[in-house]
Image (cartoon, rainbow, N blue to C red):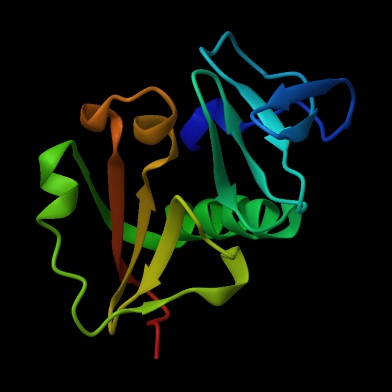
Length: 145
């Protein structure tokens, strides 16, 4: 849901040099974006424009993140989105990271009655802190316990 859904399909293609490393294009974007989706030298999944920013430690983490976002969106009865400085103000004390997403710049957190997706990749890649976003999913019919 974030990053306009990511690449249309995973199709590693051309190489791009970033500093001392090489990046593989992960696939063509669904929409026009100011960055490309790339796979890093250690298998990370991320975005590249002004700089390389790994979002997840691997492609599997990206896929898990997409699946979790879809599930949370359809299963929660309430969502709230905050951007910019408000993301830093979120109190995630007592929350645990969702390990399956292997988050680097983008992370998911599980609390007693909600899930929180924190997206910092775009803000880091474009040097635009106002672009950081967090979505809080709550009021799950089936609970999170």
